[in-house]
Length: 636
Image (tube, rainbow, N blue to C red; front, side, top):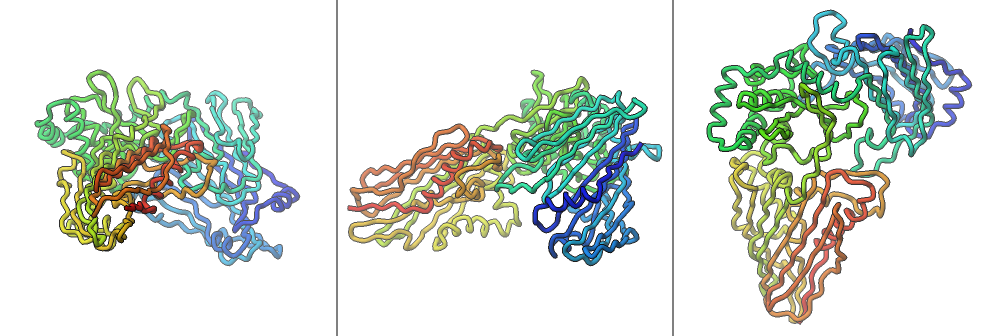
């Protein structure tokens, strides 16, 4: 039976009065879900939204619902405009179906769109939609099979109880067979009020109805670099799957049954050619991972009713040499198996936390390989093209689930030590009596820092020199660069990237009879493109929300400066050191005769930080910026 929500006129008025004044306000948002034995769900969503100003009118001029025709059916059942003057307009006939805009992934997604037309502030749009199906499709034969969830007989959902505009009342109700043992949990709901939950048995006794209600949802003022909304705002997870092991076994089986990882003779021949020079099992793993990463281009083209969890087979991937993450992962699993390894596909969630309820919390496919000692190593050929790592450390502290025949539990990738992603800047310079600075400066980087520095080579070869020159000229516009040397970018696996500059900068320092004023060139945030922490606004003294950086990182800087004379007094920026595992900082200056040496070190120990880490992170960033902006003063 379908469950409806009835809101009285008096209730609507009360809800309307409680709205926060923004461009638009959702008066109510109610969803009713009925699950069948197969897992197929019927969803009715009923919303009423008011335009508070002309910006809200613009936003409500069209109403859109995204869906994939291969796995979902959507229809508008009611679309009304309640004008502020009391008149009601039915616009249900203005429904159109368009191919959705796409970039890189062209899987045939569509949008049902309703042309609402002209609105004035105070007008309200009320609409009801019906949907059956889900996000991803699998291969199927009968007419309704494409609407049944991939894990047949099970139901799962992720329900955000947050919004970018005020919501006076949100209700989510689901009716499931009692024998399905639905599990649910609410996350991140303490800060803005709890959801109310009711659980009732249906009339015939074989169903249980769960209702979740939340009033007065207000938009969260997000702090810069905050985590995903689902990680910090109220959300509901529901699943009838008993545990992650069951999901793991299912994911393993669905791809083995389809034959996703059977190597063709052409694939086997290519694997034999690639691993011929390998001396260890790790050599073979690295060679195959980087071949897939660099040779399977990222481009998703719809192959019909096989998109989603079913990984395309080796013949298709090897022939087309293109695909999305699941195709890259499937190709790597196939090649590793052809080389004699035990390898399996895995699922993960990039840039968002996976919580314990086994709902469908995945947006990315990767690979797991088992070593001879029984341990598993995670590989991601999607994120490591031209990267020296096999698993991008931009994915550290990230949940994943391997598809194993015996099943696996949810796991998280560990922290990657900052030393694995070092940036080392070394300079030897000389200041002439006229203030000219000359010498060389070299940057060397590893891991994710290597990837960021190596970005200067991402353009056409003809633009490499301009890109490298820019990194020095943006901190010293008057620099005259005489020579630039760098490692061979095509041989990125053989050694970390190194780029060296020989230069002369006229009028760099202020020199008079008794005083010398300048800032060490190496301290001025050279190659800031590789130091994403420098792009944080460290003005706020505190945070309430956790935050993330691109990766953990170690920055080490040293410069030896030959001075035009001997100076007795050294005045330099006073910096308090920072000593914390999450972030630390230290620096020093020392003089020997007419030579000044400057050294600086900053360490950032995580990718995902707690709000309490902000104090040390903020101070370390502020210290590095202070050294970049404050001159050294030497006097005789």
